[in-house]
Image 1 (tube, rainbow, N blue to C red):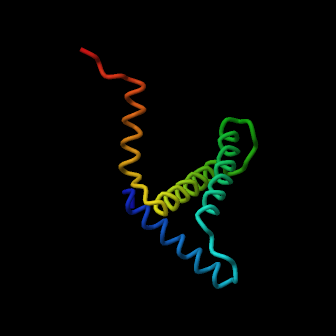
Image 2: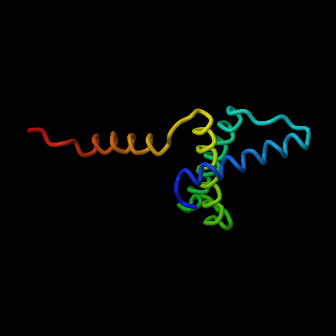
Image 3: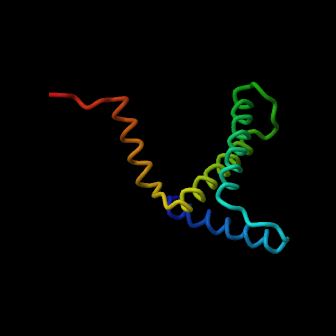
Length: 109
């Protein structure tokens, strides 16, 4: 499973399972704003792990935790993009082209 569409499908499967679990436990289903807030929290956790990798913090099992946190962030991005109907394949390519053009402008004749 490495293509973005496969990752998106898996992210949605897990989101649906969270929704089922919350309903079973009498909790309100997360709305998209909740996923966005969760993402912000994950980014904060990611920053702490990057600090640990740079020897600014002491965190045990930092490599495993870093991989986990990056996957958490990716999951949130996939769920949010799917909710809003954003084609991440297309947007990623377009954004990279814009950035590349800024870095290496096309030669003018």
